Structures are given as C-alpha cells and as structure tokens.
Image (cartoon, rainbow, N blue to C red; front, side):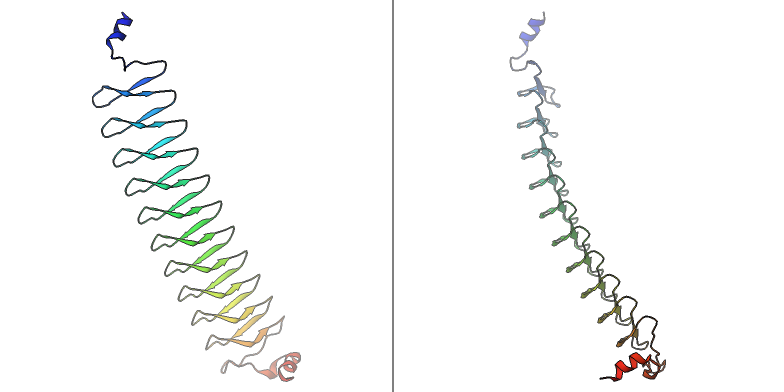
Length: 256
C-alpha cells in the first residue's frame, strides 16, 4: 500500500533521507528543482512565494533580502560576524560595506547611506557634523583625545584636540576655539570678559594671577600676584601705584 502511494507521486517529489521538497505557499505545490539538503535551505521570495534557486543558506551564511522587493541579493551573504550594511531608504544592501569584528560603518543620518571611508575601529569614533549629519573623515577620537566642535556651526575644528588634561580655550561669542591657547597643568589663560577672547601672553602659573583692568577688561602684563604679594591698584585710573609695591618689585621696576 505504502509503495503504491509513493509510485503515484511524481519522481521528482520524493523525500530522500532528510531532503524535503520546497512548497510554493500560494499554490501549495512543490517546486521540483528545490530540495533542502543537510542544513542548506533555499531562499523564498516572499512576494511570489517562489524559491530562488541560486540562493541557499550554508553554514552560518545567510543571504540578504531586499525588504522592498523581497528578493534576495545574490552577492551578499553574512559570513561569520560580518553583516552587510543596508540603506534604510531603499532597503538595498551596500555591497562594499560589511561590519568586521568591532568595525561598524558610519551612516549618514539624512540620506541613510553609509560612508565607505569611515569605520569605527577599537575606540576610534568618527566625528559627525550635527547640522549636515555627515561624518568628518579627518576627525576621529583616539584614546582620550576628543575633537573640539564649534557650537554654532556644529563643525569640528581639525587642529584642536584635547590631550590628557589639555583643554582648548573657546571664544564664548563666536564659539570658535583659539588654537594657540590650551590649558596645561594648572595654567589657565586669561579671557577678556568683553570680547570673550583669550589673551595669549597671560597665563596663570602656580598661584600667580594676572591683574585685569576693570574698565577695559584687559590684563596688565607686567603685573602678577606672586605668593602673598598683591599690587595696589588705583580704582579710578586702574593703574598700579608703584610706591605701594614691595621693595624688591620696586627695584625691579626701576632698575632698568
């Protein structure tokens, strides 16, 4: 009885060992040219419910299917931990982009397209312009180095990075960093409160603080407070009164 049933079946539709035919989900008919062998499974087009002959899943390799057309993309397979990058707009995979190890491509948030030349390696992260959502190729964060971003234009300033405890000085008005000024150790630059520009020749070293003219907000270069010595400033003219300085400093001022 059983053998007669098998004889009635078409020859191409038999299950051999663990081989199972693939059935079209619409017509409920088997597709002769497709069988599942071992762990190989054919890929079925979700729209037409037809199997795609050239695509099979081998080992841990899975084909990539276009979410719009429900068709598999033959040249793209996921190997090991490599995953292709899919454009979120077109739902098409980008062949030249794969994620290897801990390398992840950078995707432009506006166009949803991956930027081929940018990958995150180790702890290196690219810097993305917040306005255009485009990555800036020449800028990566290495170790504890962070680029300085202009708060107005949202563009990174290539020549400025924070190293160790060195922080650049940013002009509060223009939101641009001042390249020649960095804070080293306990040295802090002196910033003019009106123009928000740093004064290059003035830095605070140890406990030395410059004296700032309260009217012009400009520092007086020749005056620093050392130890417990504080100069006396005339509040009207904002000039230091030389006669009221310690003897040593008076000698320094008048010796040459």
